[in-house]
Length: 357
Image (cartoon, rainbow, N blue to C red; front, side, top):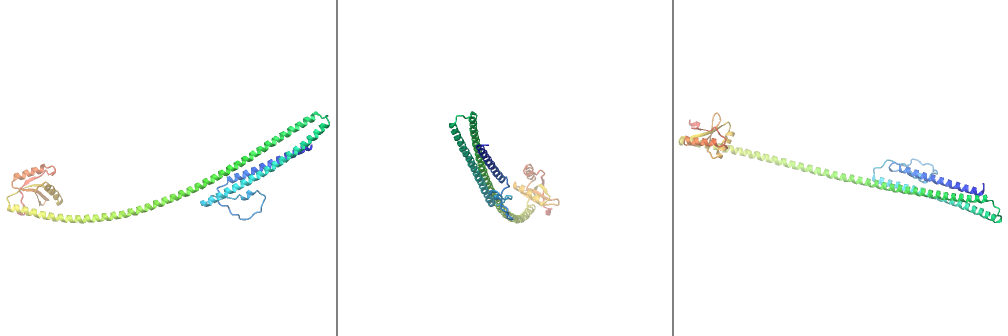
């Protein structure tokens, strides 16, 4: 194997090793970010119970902590969300820095290998040109071999450039994805913060509304109680006043009835004793005084003179007296035809008080 082939082989090995190392680092960074993204909602870190020996793990591994269920305190939740965001940004920045460093090392190795290969190829061409100038007896197959080598080197260089561009695009894509993920985490954290704030505000408004409603209910209950007591007292006073008034009216009515009965008795006695014989129209025989008073009131409202007399069967109600039977009979007809009185059984009598019979 010639020196040129060895150098190309070494350069390919360097390129391959650098690519593998870079891919491994990028995959590991993606796994760590994905693992951090799929963890449960953050709360405060769990305190460390004992110290452990330091190892050769990456820097971001020391920053990953165990998480517990979401805390109830909004301020603590906000602070922990902010700490998680800063931790993620720091881990991604360190990952990008390491990826950029390895990419730079790979590019330097590729450039050094390409530069060294170009120098060796230039030296070979220089020696070959010098040999060709000194001798025209160069086999054509040797020329063909050199052209094939040049073509192969060009193809390898093109493939290396394409691979480099693909790796660069992949790194750019991973960085873009990481930026998008950070932006999404930030948006989600802000949305969670806003939701927590809205929930706190809604609960505060609900509590204020409930307190206000309770105060209004208590106020209304007190007002209703006061009003009910006032209405009860007013009703009691009214009932008492009505009872007193009714008692007074009843007392006055009885006195008036007694006086009226006494006057009617005196009048009837005077008519029987001092006047001529009188004819009366008997309109009803009431079973009690209340019924008799009702009939007497109706007749007197029509302008009739009414006289009552107590009998063994009830209270006799009579209209008159009239000086003759015909006048009394006309009065009877008038009473029986008056539909408002509703007295169909009136009749004419020759009435004499019991004490004069």
